[in-house]
Length: 92
Image (cartoon, rainbow, N blue to C red):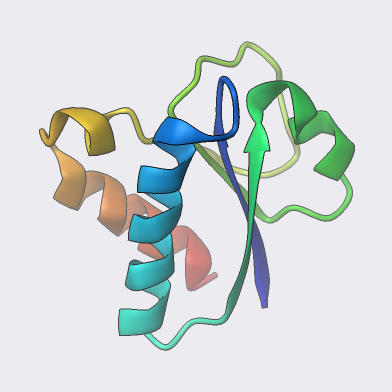
């Protein structure tokens, strides 16, 4: 099971949109995930347990797991490319 952090600035609004999309993507592809919806400032607390960060917020920090920018889930442009990136990471 992959632990996926879904983060935005406040950990509430935009991350909920992304959380729902990642949950659906995982379900469609029979991939078990543990989704954690967090504030971007809380990501460091999960550094030892996370496999992937999907975020709508900007981050300058480096992490030992992949970070995927998901702002396009809010604009609707390029969502399929981002979903493909997420799926690729989930399948590893």
